[in-house]
Length: 466
Image 1: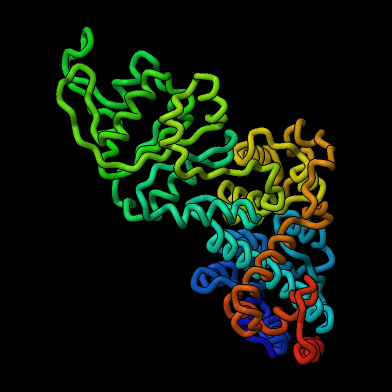
Image 2: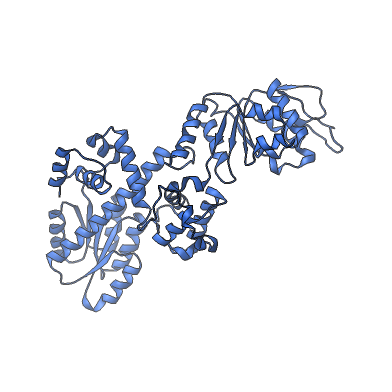
């Protein structure tokens, strides 16, 4: 006896005797069964309540079983469809499998054969459903405004975000390009009391030097030749909220001095104006440079550095958190190919884990987007990756706790999720399975597979479920 909801089974055939037989077998397996005589009726039933399992005759009145397959897959991509066919039409059934059918069954068929086929289909549907839930659960629990990962270093970052979100202290975010510095800045802002206030992003490296002061602090009409109206600066635009200065190390020393004055006096003076405008905001800055080395070299003001360095969040490179790569890969798969359930082949995942990622998470995202655009709809293989990633074979780059994958990364993701939920539930199996939405038998099976300790009594219970 399991707590899993029964699977929905739909049989589509214009022969009453075939429908009755399949309904009887399906009910014997515990499915919720429904039947349809035509492809049109099947599509109507599926629209109202998408089935998990479908067995359809290839030859139906008007539309064919292939049309049923197309309609079902359009409604629910995780539904599994089997084609029933006469011996003379096997080639059409094989073609249907290439279009997404799970298998075909040749008429006349035995009850044993049908039962075995439905059992295998049900196992696949349950596995895909479980993995889909687990992946969604991991993202819901561990993602903070796009920050994905369960490694210790990224969890440290998330804890820092949680501590910093309620204050107004200036924050410096340090990390290589592509590590997600703006995501962290947004998380600090939008998870705190300033969430309804403005969040203004400034790419300091992209500002034109001659117009930098005007962009940041604004200017009055006539401040420059040809300037016919006043301009509000970005600091005033961010008033009452947060201003995020990305790559602050690119600011020239003159602008650094004026920025320090704004932080000290909480007011700005537009170019060409004698008036000072009060501003109350939070400053979050980011850099991929070593600002301490820069001020020692005279390239960055020491007083500004000390002001910014009150709280520093260090973002790890992707090389330092390789265990997050499988989860990040599936995060980007869901972003760029939602609902397609694309799998990553072991060879491709090995290369992704071995590569050095100089461009960090941004480079990984671009890599997955490229692979989706160039690869097959159902899988990403080694040849779908850029040549530089395919050619990286330095296994010494793998961190000690990350082993080479011989299966898809989803298994590792599942293990991480179950372990974490199990710990959050304090080892309570009933709470754990309710949080995960799986049956007792499935939970014990997973705990055993991933060597998560059971008590002697629980071991006997687990054995009784097999």
